[in-house]
Amino acid sequence: MGQRSVTFHVPFMGQAILSVTLNPETAEPSGRVVDQFGRPVQGAEVALVLADGTVVAQRRTDSSGWYRLGTVPANTSWAALQVKAEGYLPSGQINVTEALLQGEALPTVRLIPGTATLDGVVVNLQGKPVAGAAVRLSLDGEVVAETKAESDGYFSLKADVSSATLGLLLVEGEGYSQGGIVLRELPTPGQTLTKAVMIYEETAVVEGQVLDQNRQPVAGVRVELVLEGSGQVTSALTDASGRYRIEQSLPNGATWAWLRVRPASGTFGGSLTHAMDMTPIIRLTPGDTVVTDLLVRR
Image (cartoon, rainbow, N blue to C red; front, side, top):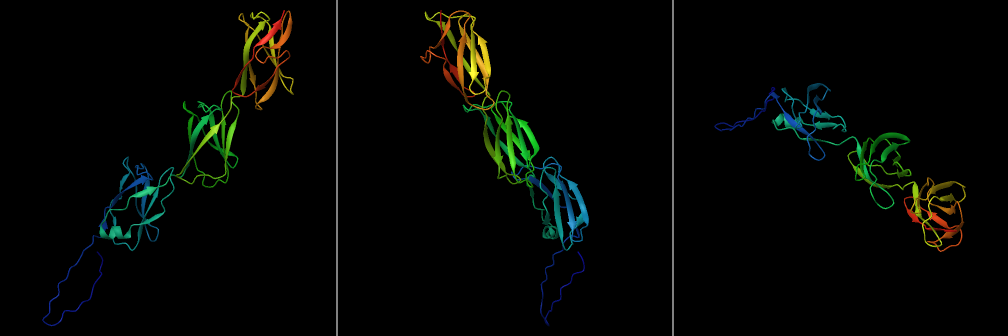
């Protein structure tokens, strides 16, 4: 390879033993591209670049992450690999001058994903998973990724967060309040950040039975639930067994409420459950059920 020469001296009547290594002028190098876990990266673009910027070979990796550059010059003063793949950060320039000169295998290139992963679980106040909840990731005020929680509440999002300064994870589920987490520290490319997001049901349930002074069920009476401070009234009629059920939406969270009965005949006598001879005040908490039996005197 080339015309390189070495000058040496052999003394009179002396003897010199010379060992000469010949390196090939060209080579057919190959190598492999993997991710940070050692898994093959298919379709990665591998280029061999010389010192003057000339690209002498360019190939793509197969399903096993392998590539073969073909015939390239091995007697170059400097050569580097440049690897790019969709979804990964570029490798930069990897010096392979010595490997080409010695006819050695090219180094395995490990690529780092260009995206970070945010995963976690969506649960309610009781710690139970909320399936189907919509999960959105916003970076600096713009939604960049969204998904839905699986049957066990698990979610996973991938996004390029390298240029973002602030993230917001928003979760919404049907019948639930909106939940969210402010992400002031974002993961770097290739890293995973795991968060649990808690959302609460927007409705509380009030149920029970309406009885008379003889402990007999009273059917067909109207039970009214009045939210304190708003005057909002939600009502339900008792069935043949005197039972009622009221579902009350609580978009603003827990509150107090009044419970009363408007019978067709007789008078409302208060709450049997609370041992009160007046309109009972109950605390409504999203996701909870309050059982209150009511009295009608005939």
